[in-house]
Image 1: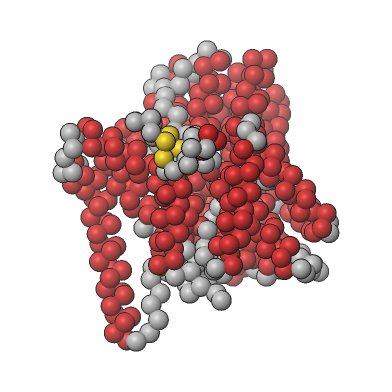
Image 2 (image 1 turned 135 degrees about the vertical axis):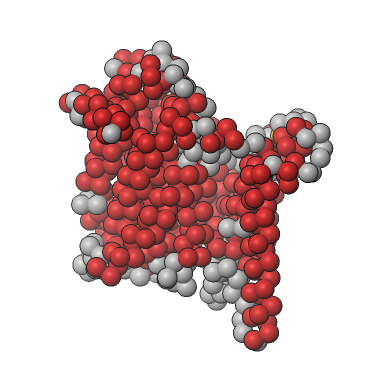
Length: 506
């Protein structure tokens, strides 16, 4: 009953006309930011942060939060319709774009919208009921535990890849090596920079994602020398009952995965989408279809993406630790308003805490109304001739890349990865495992070094810690199971398809 009373108290603040207006502004701006290739909530919130000085405290925080989770809604649109992802919609390119090519763009966007609503709703329940205590779970994880968690994340390679497992592992290794480019924070040594100054700070995730997916797809379409027309005729927006029944289980699974990973530092929407996709490739009734345009491939990752965006507020507001750059900016907004996020926030500022939690569900409703009924308008982009559309897409990609660091060199890096991504396409190599390795590689190195320093070089810390030992045992079980499946398949003389991967298309 305390939770219901607290939520009622929160809605009494969130449903004022002023806070409703700021919530709507945040959702609209966030959706537009998600739609524009290359732009993201980090750049947008950083630009709007000075405005919080002149906006009431509750309204400012509600607006900035709306921009963050609103962008998670909007970024699926560009990924599904044009295969141009943001960091948190990389997996949406796999099945979402395949559905577009099959003329099911409306269904894919409806699936993403409804799944995001489900994921957001589940995460809000978690946030409201467990925020005072669940944030402490993150404190139980030490460097060794996070290192084992990252290793478990690499197991996702066999699920994310749409080609052979060997090719997927090779692409993942390439991603790990790309993630090492830049200056070593511990020694100050430059790695793989070839004495080029603009590589000293490393390669940005936005540049790699836009290049390997967006620019590469544009190059492929231009090379095809044919009019690009993903769908024709009537847009089938509403799913059939059979299709709707396929959405719900995947969305619920993704909601659980995203809600958990959103709490952990280093998790969040980027990792949650891969984990949810891997889970669906393993347990879904239609796992054989995932990778070639299945509803589950869109629903699970969309729900996980939105759920992780919501629960990432838990460590910030309950223990005062921002888990990603966007949460660091949100913490700055709290501090600007004279509020210190942490254990005393719930008791000291209950109106702000519960008002922000309640506003997230209000924003969820706004985003469903904004996205699902307006899907037909998003699809009108295909009425523009591709000869006119692709220069505009390239323009927004350049703006989005440049806006991250205000560095012109990032545009050239994006172009280079665009050519590399096009080469991968011609060689039937999937770029998704590369992105997984690029994201997890630096994180694995960081936590491994911390674990070694704390244990004074003893590898036993990975076994003696209960969480780390349990994760390593899980990895061992998975590897043994993979080997058994491999040898059984060879014994029968049938082609080996490991862990849900599907043969590459020639």
